[in-house]
Every structure is written in structure tokens, then in C-alpha cells.
Length: 321
Image 1 (cartoon, rainbow, N blue to C red):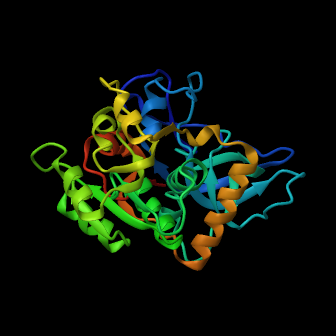
Image 2 (cartoon, one colour):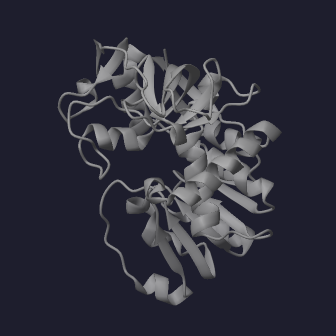
Image 3 (tube, rainbow, N blue to C red):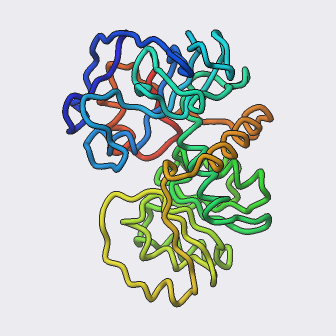
């Protein structure tokens, strides 16, 4: 099978396609023919060896994917060959024609969701759900500010929030991205690249009177300033970060606010099970609709990794096989 194998940590250029032996499922393992694999920012940190979940080299990257069950081990009861599924991780990684998975990594993909969309389900939708409901404890009628609302996690957050009765304020750095956020249900969308820097937060405060929740995708840039738009006793959930910052904790004290960090991969099994249940319901009912921003073939995985970090966020980036 064709597979991306990382043999040394480094830049996108270490993502090389090789021929590898197709694994055989044993026990409670499931072999999935991958039709599309999702590309996430966390994949780039793992590729560079800069993430706590980075495995030792060599390894096949990728946590998101969607495809068809090819074969199952003798102890598998959850799915049968031929089933359409999305993947929540894999034993062998998803940047390959086949991925070997555990039963709790394989979930039903409704017929109304394409494989490319399915490759954008797990990390974005579980991350957004955990941030909103497990960490921020969002309630009907509250207002949430979603930074980077046009990205995969941002789009997911809009859909979860609107379905749960929240008012959604989004930000995006391109006109196309702002249009997408509005199409997905945001009530107001602001340009976070406008001048003066962070002036859009003052505009949000003026337009809303302040927000109860902020989902922060780039804390090293925004966190110090976020409190301009936060209500008293508000909650900031740090989802993404790409460096350090100079930070004055008095801004937390002044708003009597709560700042919580999160990593999807720290979620306990019962929380993961809840998220997959809700995701399955949302996909089937049609209020969760992943947005595929751009597709790359497997051989162009280095370009996909550059795109997910360097470009203005727009939906999910996927690899097609």
C-alpha cells in the first residue's frame, strides 16, 4: 500500500510516500481502506516532534480519516466489512491507503456525509464540542466568540453553538472566510486582520455588550487582548497556541474570569464516547456539516502541511487516496 512514513522529525519535506505492507487485523482490530485523511495543525506539530503525542520515528501520521471497512479481526462486533466509517485515530496512522484501528477508533459515517467530509469529523468536531460543553459549560442564550471561525474547528463550533441556542460571534482574516462563517450560522463576523490591531475586539464589545465565552485558537497572539470583549465572570478556552507571550494576569482578575486550556487527547473515555454519540446524531440529523476547504493527493502531503499552517483558515484540508 502507499503510505506516508516519517523517518525523522522535521519540516513538511519529511513526509515521503513509500510502499508499505498492508497490515492484517487481529483480535479486536479493524482494517479500513482510507478514502480521505484529514490534515490538522496538530499533525504538523507531531511531524516536527513538538507535541506530547508524537510517536517515535518511523511512523505514519494522521488522526482523522474516513473510508470503508476492509477486514475485521475475529473479536470485532462493532462493524462489518463494507461499512462506511470515520476514524478517530488509528493504530497505524491515517495518511495511508489502509489504516489499522481499534474498535473505539471506528465510528459509523452516515450516507449523507462524503468521505472527504468524514475526514474532517473527529478532531474538529470533538475539539469544538469539548471546548464548548465540557470546558466552557456553554448554556442556551449565551454569546460565544469564535476566533478563526472559518477554520475546521471554527466551523464546527458555530454549528454546535447554534444548535444549542447560543449567539455566535466569529472572526476570520479573509472575506471568503467571513462569508463562510456567516453561511454556517454566525450572527456577526469581524475581520481579525483589520487595523488598528485588535480594534475588532472593541467593535465586538460595542456590538454585543461583551461575550460570555471565547474560543481561542491562537492564544500566543490574542490572549492578552481577548479580555476587551469578555464579560465579567466570562470564560476563555485555549484551543490553539503557537508560541509564548507576555501576559499580565490582572486582566483575568479584573474580569473575575476563568481561563482553561484543553487538549482533545486528554479527554477520558466516557467523554470521548459522549462526543462520538453527539457527533453521530449531528451528522445524521444534518446540523453538523463539515466544510472541505481544499483537497490534496497523498503525494502532496507536504503542501497540505504548509497550507494548514500558512494560509488563512477555510474549512478542512484533506488528503485523498
